Amino acid sequence: MDGIQTILKFLINRKTAIGYSFMALLTVGSERLFSLVAFKCPCSNENFIYGLVFLFAPAWVLLVIGYFMNSRMWKLFTGCCLNPRKIFPKGNSCSFFYVFGQITLNVLIAPVMWLSVALLNGTFYECAMSGLKYPGYLNTLCNNKSVRCWEELNKVACGKTTMSSSESEELKLTLQAQSQVLGWCIIVTTALLSLLTTCCARCQSKISHLQMKFWRIYIEKEREQLEQLFQLYATKLSERNLTSFFENKEPDAFPMPTFRAWEDASQLYSFNSSEQHYSTLHRLVEDGKKDISEERETMLDFVDGREIV
Image (cartoon, rainbow, N blue to C red; front, side, top):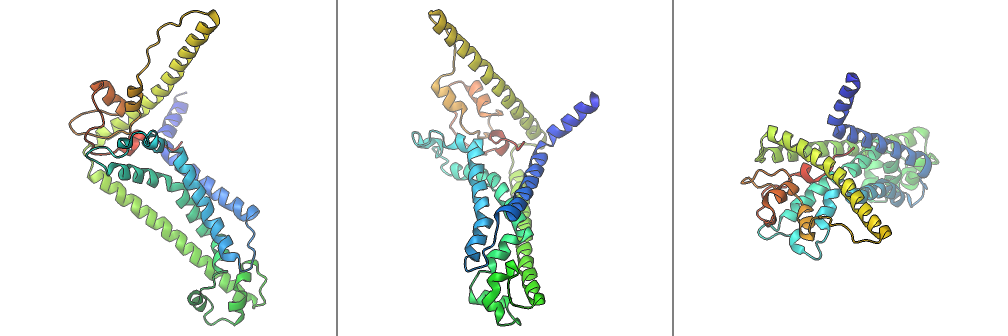
């Protein structure tokens, strides 16, 4: 039993890394499935558009799905049409762009993974670029090649050219090499940007490493218990209402948060160095009905965002 608990504890502590690994494997599998089952390069003048659609359309879909599934996205935008101050608070109108930027960086992980895997494979890029008719690109690609290279480049991906096999194979390898170089450029650039943004955020942090570690644990526990209390109170309220209906009697009093309390508890958390609060709910409980939309210093991503599981 101790061994099982140790394994479970390890998996829970590493759930973010496991989630990203699972996402990477899923992306690789999806790309291979698209390449083998759905993708059929037309080997005509439509190559460029067809290849780009398969390269970028899934990335765009993953981006949209990421926005839909991000809980911070809906915390930020729910009710903003009725209360614009929610996303543009007084005294700090730029906070919206900062929070939306954090959301976008998290959401971009899946699309970037797709583009990287697709480019490393090279199938979509090879089809797309073999249909590009830009003279400068053709001059570079078909340099020291026969005239047929200009005329039949769009057939290289299908192997239906009348060029010599060595020349056709060289063109395919060149296109695949270009695709893989672009893929590695995206991976390296993304890794460097992630490192730089993380370093900048940590350098400017007003919270110590140990306090942040405690904070993460607190937030996780608060979420777990909040979900349990939602289930418990929803069950109690439904039982009370059904009992009152079927027994035809006045319902018992059932204390519930006010609409203002629900609204205040749903706001994105913002750190204030003058107070030691660990979440929006914590601040609301400590300060009561005091306006919590005051001075904002730092938006903490882990407070309102959900880890990948």
